[in-house]
Image (cartoon, rainbow, N blue to C red; front, top):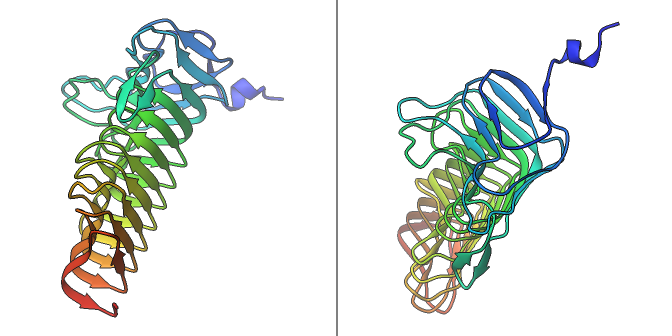
Length: 285
């Protein structure tokens, strides 16, 4: 009979830092902790990384390094990367929009000087807590997908991919959930001018809260459909804004706007600020 390693050859990871330089399938056998720098670096295409339910953490006194670095370099992006099933834990906390503490700078991220994003890659079933900068970032390359992930207390971006589905990004210092298409997601931004949900094309079945001056709960791009956005700071922000707004609810505190778009269909904007601003409205009160 064939052994499991023969049926599905996988390489174990039992200590960090660890560099993946060959394509293949890898899995964690235990929790990993680093005292500084990156925990796992992926330097090649065609990698599957199963966190296997374990946690990657850092004890760095000042938040530096990345839990899983997608080392795309400056000339080409990585492709065909899959990461799943685990946790990234860091000690950064949020105090009224000021992020500080120990641990990682980012959870899953690209190098700061990366000229290209990843392509044809997926992250799913991962939680990230307390990073100074970003949570889970694949960039806007074609075929990137982040789904069923939760990010909490990240000082810059929460989650970013071409398509983001069924995710949460709570208490982010810039934008919460970023993507070309975003569906069934929740976002919360505490950044002035930030966006809790930031869809370049379409936001569907999303809920979000913005709590900073000029912030937007849901930026739907071309379309926002079946969304609910609450702007809870009266600094000129929006509950929901998009070209076409369909079956949405938006709330704007005094000085902000509940709904704003070109066309509104079956949607309601309320609040102590401006309820709604449209060029055309259909089937609306």
